[in-house]
Amino acid sequence: MTGDLVIETAGLRKEFRTRRGGLRIAVQSLDLAVPAGGVHGFLGPNGSGKTTTIRMLLGLARATKGSMSLFGTTVPHGLPAVIDRVGAVVESPKFSPNFTGRQNLQLLARTRGIGQDRIEAALATVSLGERDKDRYKSYSLGMKQRLAIAATLLKDPQLLILDEPTNGLDPAGIREIRDTIRTLGESGVTVLLSSHILAEVQQVCSSVTIIGNGRMLASGKVDDLMGASTSYRVRVTDQADAVRRLQEAGFTIHPDGDSFRVETDRPPSDITRLLGESEVWLSELTPVRPDLETVFLDLTSGEALGEAPVTGESAR
Image (cartoon, rainbow, N blue to C red; front, side, top):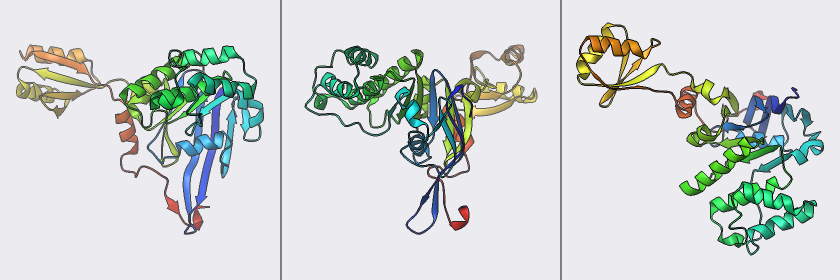
């Protein structure tokens, strides 16, 4: 295991016995590497193995094969040595509905011997300072989720693991959680954000691991995975003439509504020059970068998404 990684797994595998005697492979040969600092997206469709992986890292489920480490310490055996450096929101938190947000945090803090200063810092980080005296049962879903994050921040963790934190939230709640996660990443906390919502991951994550059917499909910096643009959206005064002249010059053209896309490794100035020389005038020439959704669909095209397949005894 590499000590400078906050999270690392090698050949991680988790099998479940089905009622019919077969095996369901939830995670298969997963190599996960999360560097320190920033927000790392753990991306995949529902049932792809994200929650199972997180539960194994936290000692809530036993791996069938493979190895895992947190802060360079092998887990689950060494989990007691590092657990105080880890915060996690994996399941719905249990708070007293008739207590205020602050009272709920105070109760948790007392049981852990944590001072008042940490309560103030946690409330400020999740922007609940103005609603801390409201009862928990009056909170919106987004506020409840932010209070759950505040509870994990009481011990000032270096790693925060969030499993689908925006599930069930309305757009306002999603934005609140997004802002909180971004603030945490900028503060120096390493955040592992598990999600199936690609647009959310792209907005807050600097790096990402994409999995499908329990195995890793891609991992790296978000910008590197999306790559440099080799496509341009073009709008012109005479589309038919422009398409004909560009194709004659060796450009690949794809229709796109009232515009068209040009696929090329050549500089965009070549498009401008060729059309100008033909007296076809541009009204738009825009680079088109693939987003995470495009990358994800390219990686998973042709395979069934969701849970890994059920196999027979031979899978062992």
